[in-house]
Amino acid sequence: MKKVLIVSPHFPPVNAADMHRVRQSLPYFEQFGWEPTVLCVDPKYVEMAKDNVLLESLPKKVDIHMVSAFSTKYTRKLGLGNLGLRAFYQLYKAGNKLLKSGDFDLVYFSTTMFASMPLGRLWKKKFNIPFVIDMQDPWRNDYYLTVPKEEKPPKFWFAYNLDKNLERFTIPKVDGLISVSKGYIDMLKTRYPKIKNIPAKTLTFGAAVKDFEFIDNHPIPLSITLDKSKTNFIYIGRGGHDMAKSLSVIFEAFKNGLDNNDAFKNFKFWFIGTSYAPDGEGEKTITPIAQQFGVEAFVEEITDRKPYFEVLTLLKAANVILIPGSEDANYTASKLYPNLLAKKPLLCVFHSNSSVVSIVKDLNAGDVVLFDKEKAVEHCLESMKTIITQLPKVPNTNWDKFKPFTAEAMTKVQCDFFNTVLKSYTTS
Image (cartoon, rainbow, N blue to C red):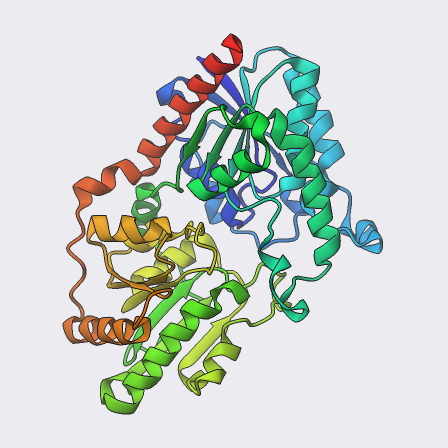
C-alpha cells in the first residue's frame, strides 16, 4: 500500500467547492492501493460557511491533520485574507513533520488555495518526494487582463502578480498535473516548456452517487421556499462577469418567449450561491444582466452559498436545472455531475469548446445551447419551449455511459495516475 499526503486547506465541515474531489475520493483510495492522509486547516480559521452534515459523509477512518492559520484580524491590516498565505507556515511545519517519517510516496495538492502549492517544491527538495497538482481553476488567470477596470476583482494587480510569481516558482518543478480542463494543462505546458513531458491527466470532478443516496436517507431542510405553482429554473454555483454572454442569451430568449407565450409568465429563475464572499457581502453579478433585458421581476439571485446537501436537495426540487457557462472556453462546471444526478430537465448554455458540451450530448443528458454560435438566442428559446411542454419528462440519460464519471471510477483514474507519476519520477 502506497501513501499519499493530500494537501487540501479547505476540508469538511467547510463548505467549499474545491475540496469535493478529495472528499468524494476518500472512500475509494485504499481500494486502489493508496492510503490517504489529509493535511488541512482547522475550520475555525476559515472564513467560509460550515456544513456539519458534510462530516457525516466522510469515511469513519480518515487520517486528518489540521493546522491553525494566522488570524485575519491581523493579516487584513496587511491586505491579506487568502487562506493559502495565512496557513502557509503552519502547513509547511506540519508537512515537514509528516514527511520526515519517510512513509509517504507522493504529495497531492487538490485545492484552489494556490498559495499553498509552492510547498510542493520545498518538500520535494527537502525530502525527495514528487508532487502532483490538481489544477481546478487557472492559477495565474489572464482573463481579467482583457476586461474593463470596473470588472476586475478587488486588489487584482496585487493578486495577479503574486499568483504569477508563485506559479513560476512552483510549476517547473511539478511531477504531474491533473486538471478539470485539458486547456489548463496545455496552457501550463506552453508557458513552462520544462514540464512538457511530465504526466498529465484531464479529469473532471466525479459524480458522487453516495451523496444522493445520503440525502434520500437524511432529509435536509431548505432555507429557500420554492413556489410550487411556478416553473422553477434553478442554477446553483458562482456568478461572475465572465458569464455575461451565456446569461444574456438566456435572458434575451426568455424575454422573447415572455412576449409571445403565456406559459413563460410562470417562469421563476433562481441563481443561488453566486459569490464566494462571506454571507451578506456578495456582489450580485446576475441580477444586473436580467435588468438589462427587463426581466428582473422573474429572477431571484442569492449570493450566499448554501450547505452542500441543501444544494443537492434544491436541485432535486427544481422543475428545470439551468447551467450558464463562462466566456473562458476551458471552463468546466465542477457541479455538472450533481446536476445530472438530480435527474431533472437540464438546459446548459456554454461555449462550444467547453467539455460540458460533449459530455452532456454524449450522455443524452439535456439540452445544450452554444452561446458563441449564430442564432444562440433562437436555439435557447426553442429549448425552453420544448422543455416546458414536456414537463415533468426528464432526459433519457445513458447511465451506462455515465459510469466512468462516478467518484469511484474517477478515484481509480487518480490512483493509476499517481502510479504513473511515481514510475516517471524514479526513472527520470
